[in-house]
Length: 240
View 1 (cartoon, rainbow, N blue to C red):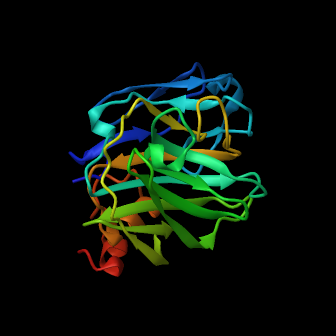
View 2: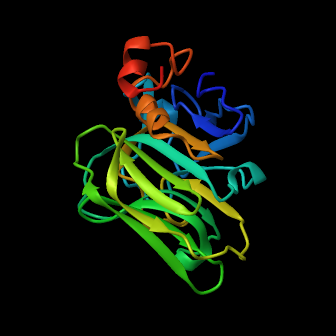
């Protein structure tokens, strides 16, 4: 089965559009995702790693508004991945968050952003007063296309860069009890806190933990017909 048809694929934004402000969700959920705050495919579509991509330039208020759907609430196990090319890592930039309009960490069910210097952080809040985070050891480099994946398996969170697992992890202890009224890509607050300053391509959310081999495969062959379509590569990965 192709990872593009996986029953646990909850969001797939290829970001290949060249006009308008609607980003097509190629998952079976077919959710409405809207470019907000002035960013458009007409002005901000650029060549990506796979087809086109969307270029964010740290403009306040620009983000992609996602539906606050149950599909993206996500269970205890999940995977979020995308290709990202930062224009700069001199300041923090938001990638995705789900929770409330507040920028407080404890009010986000989950959130991913890049801190000053390029390290990637995955945050979990409890919706009340506490939060916990995973920070990568590896740093993103400005001007370099990088496939980043965040995976949670049985409560253990890990980050991958270009299909390779970073040497750090976090065991989740918090339980979410808060409200969920905001989900965006490209900032940390709808009113702008850490606007994204990067090119995004092929943004995916799975409601399961992908295997190491699957994450590596998405880094290299995301649109192959099957995970096993490239037999030579599959043998090297030990999955054929």
